Image (cartoon, rainbow, N blue to C red; front, side, top):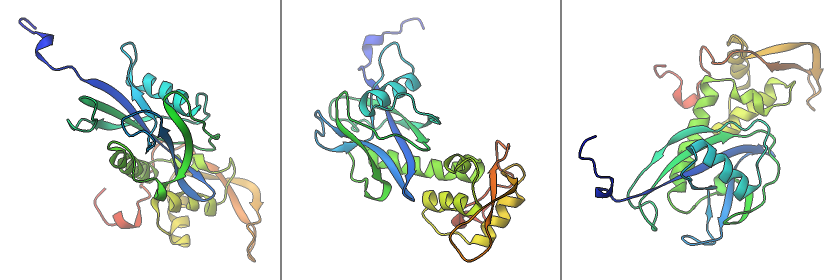
Length: 239
């Protein structure tokens, strides 16, 4: 553009933040780091950091995840861009715009702190707050995004064994959504959704109850669920 002067605008930095969620011992957990430097030294935060000049935001996100938590080669990790956070006062150092990512990671290893993170750990979602910066908001938005992905995709099957019961699948939904589901209704909806799951012929698993062994299923081939498996609070709303 003719007459454009890049020095007429105050420079600002771009960072990435990662809200990585997993299921551990039947509860939803989030990956957090303890900040080793100011601002907010000693406070817990989402892993993340500054985007380098030669990096894309996703490249920076994967690098920061590896540097701060040691999770560099994680099977099943799929980062999804969540949104951009750009409030002028979100970082006390300077104007910082953050590109946030979220992921629901199955069977993760134990993290360890590195870079400018004093330590890293999986923390139960309901005990994760308060966090540094605006990370409470980012985490809440990520939780909502992951909950929505369970409604419209078969993502929940990735957090079950290769062959699973419908009870195990239901537990994933109940854990992420934070609400109990009616078992017969859940079973009916899952089996009525084309391509969501498929039965494993002749296979069953004892579940510890007095009834007959539960049938086993595996993930189907559907990329999207039609109709969606809506949360109870959303049932009856227009799709």
